[in-house]
Image (cartoon, rainbow, N blue to C red):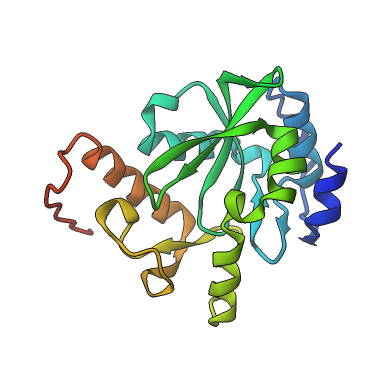
Length: 205
C-alpha cells in the first residue's frame, strides 16, 4: 500500500522511531500502516510530513482548539508546509473508510476532501498536489529564498486570511508550528460568530 505515494513523494530523511511508536491502534488499518512506515518523515523538502504516532493525540487537541465541533471524531495523520493539518473523520465515509478533512489554520476553514487516507495519498496528492498541498505556492516561497520548515515549523500567515490578510509571500513567515496553531485556533473560535466586517483587535502576550 502507498506505492504510488512513495514513487511520487521521495522521503527527505527516514526518521528514527522508538518501538513504542508502532503500538498506536487507530482502528484504521491504512492509518496504522502509514504511521508505522512514515511517522515523523518529511517529503519533497518539507512540502508534506507525517505525524509521529505518539503525537496524534496532541495534534487532535491542537486542531480541535479552533474547530471544537470535530472533537472526538478525528485522527490527525499529516500536515503540510503551511501547517495545514490532515485528519480522518469517523463521521464521514469515503469508499467505506473514514473521509479526510483538511484543517487550514490560516484560512480558518475545515474542508472535506473526497478521499480516504489511502486515496488521499495515492490519488489526491499524486494527481492534484497543488490543490492538496499548495505545492505551487511552496515552490514560489522556496524560489524567493524562503527556508524549508523543520518538523516543528510551518510557513504561516502574519495576518491570517480570515482577518483579511493577503495570500502573498510578503504576508508569510517561518513560524513555530505549535505557537502558530495555538494562536490561530484562539482567533478562529473568537471571530467565528462575529458578523462579517467586525473590527478585531489582536493583543499578543
